[in-house]
Image (cartoon, rainbow, N blue to C red; front, side):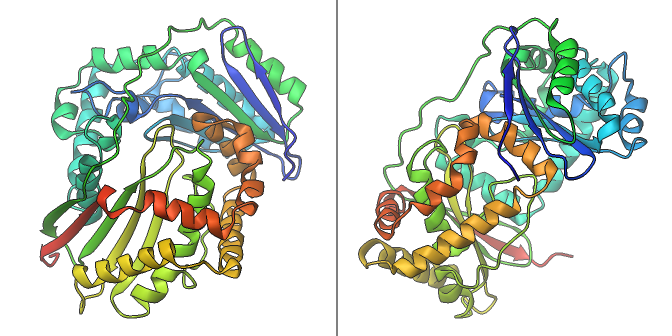
Length: 428
């Protein structure tokens, strides 16, 4: 994919990111808002996720019963996601039908209804979703580890919110959140595909230029000090397997250490995908932890996870314990690999292979038009588009000394959270 793109900004603060790709006659539009679970006040966790749901409940121009038909009958797909730092909506359409998606997003930036009946209906949906999640061992474990990892920062909460808050959030809470954060100066609209940038820009300007900017919205991302000692937690519940989750404080995406840690992640557990929309997978059988845990019948599987965030979040390993093994044995083998990485020279050939795998994973998450539109906006949620354009070059610059340095800096056992899920009974 070519990297030529256009960036334009309206007087009201709305930014457009446009990339022409004429390989197939489709266009993908992503509308990004700088609002996620980190922007929710105490007692109102889950607001951003709930507002996302309400954006599918209609406007005067696009009533609820017409919304899905407006996209699907034209051969398009659409969806939305809410995360820690952002909320996004996308449509991928046949190029000659993109106008309906452009008009829909401009309308629901300001005209979503937030009907009381729909709010109460969606409250039940979200409560059911939350209660369903709590039956899943990994959700239960991750929620406990995430809460233990942060004392002050809103990153300690799951995006879906705390059940008590979901039960008590009002229409006023939801509408105020929508009105505060769904403003042109808090948004980026990214399009990639088969269009003429001058023509599409004119359409976008006509749709959005009269929408007034909003006030600078409140932010709740308080600074979080580094942990002073290791925390260990145990979670019990119905399930089939025992899990071990090991979480360290990670650097923010814009930190130069992020790229060395990405290579370390590839080396230890296999490369992680940064594209939360999707984009292929790569076997982790050459990784150190796979060979020392899975091949030794200590674990059924092992994976790592590093996400691009505004503030320092978590670098997490998840180990599924083999039925004939125990968490303690896996932890000892895990710590042995971390200690080796911190004190023994790393083979440059191993680093080269890890970089190659991380680059391949990145390429899989960038290869189609929908993913290209995704990256145009996504990179701007935590950095800027140059971060994406320079990603491969920065990975290629990482050395064995860089990897060992970030291992020593971030994988400190005194600054981690260990979580163990133990099944109390087999699932029925």
